[in-house]
Length: 325
Image (cartoon, rainbow, N blue to C red):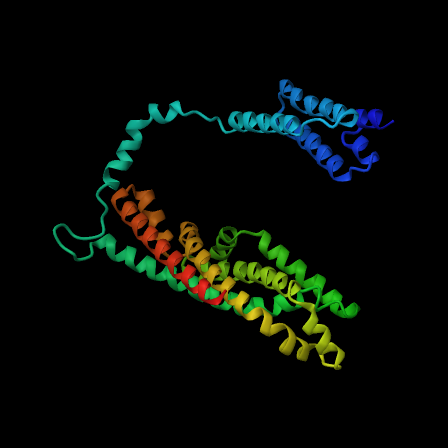
């Protein structure tokens, strides 16, 4: 019976025999293989989902090695990926001279004036862009963390399950965080550039919204994973919701909240360099102009400046997180 079931629906035979996890995994493997093959539109690739389907029948009769369908699925995914992306290493060799035209000036970054430690014209703009990037990331992280704290509390299931009203608030808060997190900060920056115009303010708004959503989700998960003992003890005394949060929750979450905020600051510094490419200010804004104008010496100098800042920020944030963890 289970053999026939797997012949018609992959994974069903395993499920009928009590192995639900294996059955679900097999069904997902066959379904995704079929989906990719149908999307690609080449009939020859149907051999891979067929192989996994036949393996599934064999697996019901005698537990078959799992590496076989996994290998077939991976080969299919890689082959389709190579075909879709038009993977061609030869084109790099054929266009080597075009690449050399770009790379040669990048070996002479334009940051200082010749034979001097004075900033060049472009070097001044690079320094200004780095300052804007750091300021935008710092302010967005600070305000985003502040806004994320109340979201973290109202989006925590263990704090909001007391009655119908609090549960409703919980679901609304979760929905807001999930929707805001699903839109990348780069897309938000494009929208706010249209609303408020070019500059760091648009980038700052985009970073703040995404930071609030991301930290709010992480804060809520930290609150949900805390020790429930102190909460139950405080509630048993007849304490209010605010008193429970103040004396049972906050002492357990401050170190983790601080570490996550510092980590998010590190992420925002990196992200703010990209936001500038769509007009959100910072070093990315100047970088975009230099790429458009073909000034690859300035592009190289900005790359070096960004790399130095990212390395320093990574070192600083790692030290700060270590102190708070």
